[in-house]
Length: 327
Image (cartoon, rainbow, N blue to C red; front, side, top):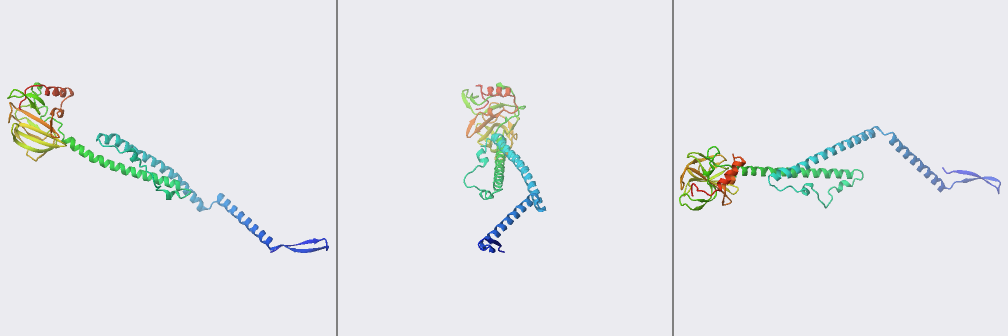
């Protein structure tokens, strides 16, 4: 409703009615409405702030619980990350090192990468975006590290199996048990130039001779496959084992052979009995080791059952220039 008022006119000495312009009326009404709306909004804000509804109170409690749980999970996540990092360090510095495997590069394990931000969609949320992106990034990095460590364990397991087979195959024990051969070191003939028992001249002796009684059991010095078993010129009755990994061993001058060509044997397997067949001057075992096609000193592979002092004496005796029991 438009306002009207009476104004005294001094010229006519009468009160005259004056009607308020429509623009003023509209402006006044609009100002009133704005003031009312603003007051209502302020009132509602105060009510919601100081007098929240039951649903709002429940939501606020849930958010507080979620925040507390998130902090606890974050702490547990850090602990798990530390465990995985410790496993990585132990794997590199112990297991992989012992198996002579290349360590997993720390930069590769860290999973650092550049380029496109994979979590840009989460960062677009103004309030919780950064937190969600950081959490997702940590989860993805831990998943990557666990997967990398799992594959590393698989590699270690495969390498350990290969190493186990290699350790079982490489000749590493004497072909005669320590309690079966005569430990008189002056009767030992080793690798190198020795006086030939028949010709009486220095000649290369490619093995080591163990002075044993006839019939003494001869054992395989490592796992492998018998590639030769029978009479061989000069060696008499002999056995050759291919151990793999470049190693072969020969056992010569046997009185009898207990294995066949193609047979798989393990370390300690009975191969035959000591004798003096072939070009030999007495009962003994002639033992040779071949590595990558080249004959090497077998004494390096005869360290079982001996103390450090006995082994040193054995090595020294094997290098004495004396007469061999065979050629």
